[in-house]
Image (cartoon, rainbow, N blue to C red; front, side, top):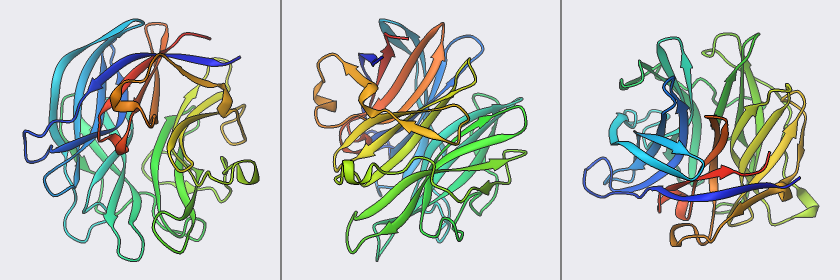
Length: 308
């Protein structure tokens, strides 16, 4: 059965009125509060094109949304010169841990022989309205024999026996530019702090069925009531689209990209691309935050699932 998502419109348009926010509103990431409001964390770029973390709060309904609090930040800024996140911090997933908020993020640096290098970091805030501090100066998931190039786009779920992370990993860099193969892998942790990546690829590229596809990134995962898992992600071929996969155990996935349908006339900000999804449930409904054109250069919008 197709998933039909109804567009509700653009939520945040980038602003150029502060040194830390000159462009972009990328990777919108939801954290549902106890009062039913939704804190949305997202990444913005400053005057030097380095990204920081911002936050706004929404009230959502099946036919509309209301911005309850104006965007605030920077909640986390780029790291020191030479650090793994010196050129930017890009939010991937935000998890509540008692009174603390854990922000798993992609820390990036601009490359020379390759366009960029990404690793996964962790920042912690005391309470829903606090700023974030780094867990450490080193990434919590970095290079290894099984992930030798670059990793990022972490999505974390806390289960009964520990934590699971789904993340993006390069299998290779090609000869030039954005020539790459980028897939989804997973890692496990007992405490959400120290991680052990698995070796195998769990969501691969389509391959011969669609040779134009070269990247699967920004997975967002929901643990369903029946114990299964649903995943949405950005697929690049070479423009961005949103895809979908399903799993009974969180490790073995079946891709069903054709099931995803975004209903309604695209607005100007999303005419060419819809990407970087974040799916969350609140008030008995399922919603998706997503970016439009230009890596979040036109901001992000909201859609509601109309079929279950």
